[in-house]
Length: 316
Image 1 (spheres, helix red, strand yellow):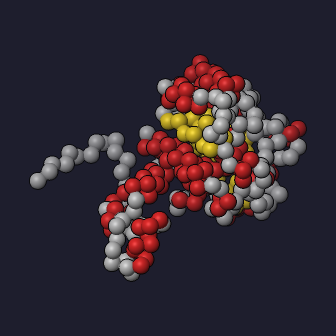
Image 2: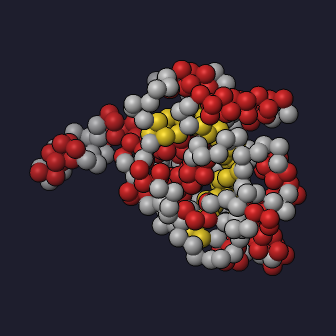
Image 3: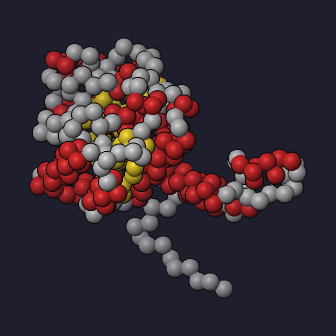
């Protein structure tokens, strides 16, 4: 008879850990697709070969992405170089979490240069973070705050920034602290899209409150260099713990690129907790409203890997 050691006092285990992905044997689960699914269907379920190894690996990623959260967690998505897919990464991380988890997930546009996050979902309201802050004292319930967010079919909610950069540039560190504090009272996960300037007041406020960061780069030398220098700056400015727990995303990878992406991945694997490559996808490249169902399967899988890697940090 095996002996189980008692849990440590720091254990964060809860009843929410008991998910089908983690605790049901593979043979008891019906295969989702492929020839195994066909055999299952043709035999009326009498012959169940179970999910394939690839499907079991995906189920494990889903289980990791569903890791329970004590309280609220804020994830800042950062990059010092524009055009690398920072907003897309924020959006897709939020979509992935919201579609899998049962708790509330919101994305806040913290880009002081008229960020575009609010245009990547169908707008349900013209309200922005400025309106949210102006009406802060009147927001006491979740039903109140929903008037300031737009919700996607995945259940992800988005708080947009203002179109006029003169307005968003006027919002500083204390303003975003107030906005995040307000969201923390009503949501379990906050994905924060930041501007490209880590020295900006708004970004400093977001970094002060972030529990984790996702650093985004394109598969190019200058972008990887800028991402690494961002980590240097964070290390030098009392954010070393954020760097150690960071997830690096190499975004828009194409098979015919000239840059040796594996070398970039190796560099960031030595600096961050995890590194994920996301392939180029024409639907995301359009920069319009995102329909998750139109993404390539490899793209959806890559963002599931990003979400699972981020969720691994929820236990610390």
